[in-house]
Image 1 (cartoon, rainbow, N blue to C red):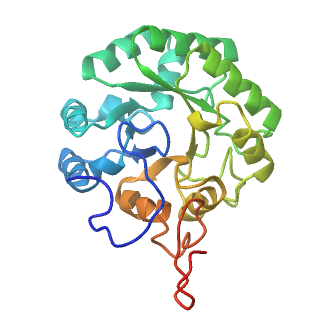
Image 2: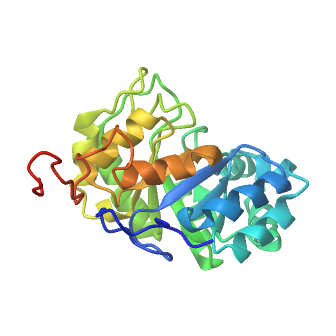
Length: 269
């Protein structure tokens, strides 16, 4: 089924088409069945760019190979969760991890250091190794520990270093909960941190984890319909697309690039 509106009578923001360089939708698979994967793809495959097998579920999922085949057929990239690689690193099994990812057919790997004591230099080595093996690399910045201080300057430096090491995309940490990293404990966006991210030279390569609708709406209103968003629940993909296009009250008339008609005056506003 083709992505995008199924009618043409509304004027909406321009939306990029796959393969996208902006406006990516990155979803979080928490361990769904093969049947659910097929059902999701049958309706919204054109709206999904990256499908992440969350945490270490790729290691456990008996249908992982079949699901990756379905994703490839739908032109959706399959990605491992960063925690799986961190566990492999802790156990000295990173090459075994990469062999597994190649064997299953993953297109992308997420490289993170937010759950372990991994040093930045070790993270960069993993990024370089993943690129050497032909993977698209998503490098996550930020900690999963809500007590760790968030320093915008540190995030800026980490982004610069990860890109230099070979990362294709940067993932701004938010977790499944949306209460760490880019967000405070209440799920509110840390605006001082966002300002540093949006002004970064590689801003167009940042995927903002935004599991909560309020976070998605804020980022869309602030950064526009083509901001890349991650950790989207499988059953919220079409709802997010509606937010991107100003077809929900949360973003109606407030997404940069959206054209709205004033019903009383008949003028574009």
